[in-house]
View 1 (cartoon, rainbow, N blue to C red):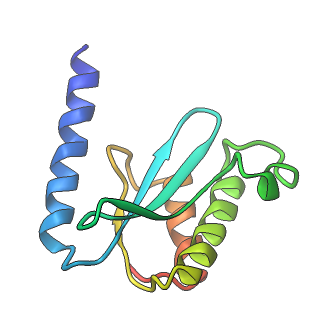
View 2: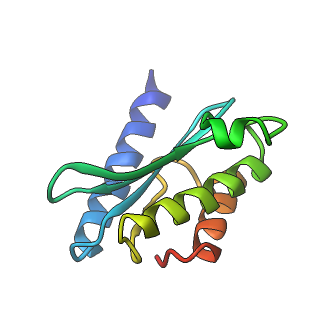
Length: 119
């Protein structure tokens, strides 16, 4: 139980820091599991999801070998950048949650930057 509590505290601490520096920008929130990775662009002021993507999307699932590697995360990063630009979002605040900026999370962020989103 202690690890779950510390993970939640870390996520809350990071989210609190993000809200301080957001300046009205939407939040790019990442959630990863052992099998998939999910990402959303969220407008916290209105409480709406502007764009979302995951390794479970039909357009990606057929092309991916697995949803749990850096190649899959990079594909999701490109997809979220495309969907966010269609929604009119150019700048976001990156919310890694309780996950360290390494591996799949880093691959997703770098692909989203290459796709046109700026953090």
